[in-house]
Amino acid sequence: MAHIIRTAKSGNDWTGNDLAAYNIHAQSLVDFFGIEKLPSVPASLGAFITTKDRTNATDNDTYKLLHHLDLAHMPKDDQEAAVDLFAD
Image (cartoon, rainbow, N blue to C red; front, side):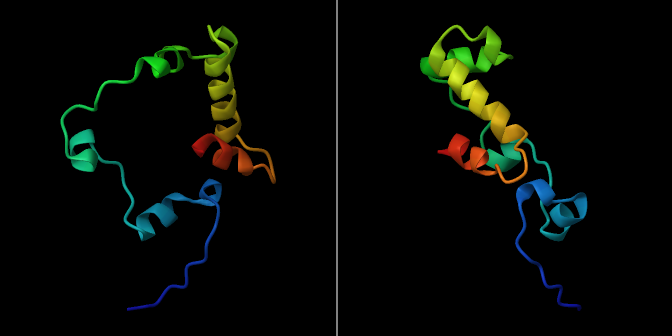
């Protein structure tokens, strides 16, 4: 068997081949979490879940969370810190 040397790279640079190499694939909720239904969402996240565009946010916290989510989804070059900031 060949020993493939894998080097670290940003998640943004992963391809379908990388996912296959690490046996990463989509799973159902039951397969991944082992439960049929996820717990209910805290009321504090209700606006975040139902607001699709940050410009429609009803409060400042929801606006900021959606703004950081937007930055994390499409970081510009050398701005991958936005992903870290959102995860914190």
